[in-house]
Length: 114
Length: 110
Image 1 (tube, rainbow over the protein chains, first blue to last red):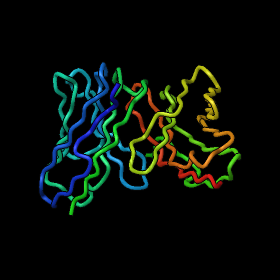
Image 2 (cartoon, chains in turn brown, yellow):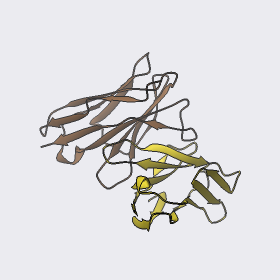
Image 3 (cartoon, rainbow over the protein chains, first blue to last red):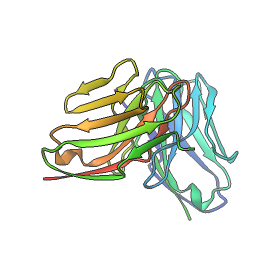
């Protein structure tokens, strides 16, 4: 079975631009979470979706938004990019929401903002 | 407030040695304690996880020790191998969204 897939792998954007990142969960998984990982730090939670509904939101500004589609894939959007948004963006899927179940991470999208 | 504190930040071990990484948490509501392994350029991979109803869980060379009263848990890697060189993250979860530690960079010298 395929694991979590993310696209694109790498992305370079300019300050002020907007970006959309995509994630496909493991087949059968209905929950998708997004994390931001800055170099040298642990992943920071951004959003969690389950059955197309937002189930949790981390401490990120409103420039960050996400959605989940009927096939459980998900998109993360970031508007008005700042230099500080440069990071590895990780998507994780799990069978159930909340923090009590195994999460499986994708390879991430490396975003560089110049 | 940092919900989980991980130490050490970096660790160097000789091949065949034991690697020990520690995490401490504050909120007693957490009831799921996973460890993740991350190689450069890759996403974190779930290594082993424990729930608070047991004090120890072993999978191969990897063992989690859990001390509920002290609110601490640790990862032990027995017979450490150069291929274990990676960054390790602990996390805490429950009804709350998982929170990750800052990571430990492990280097195993051959």
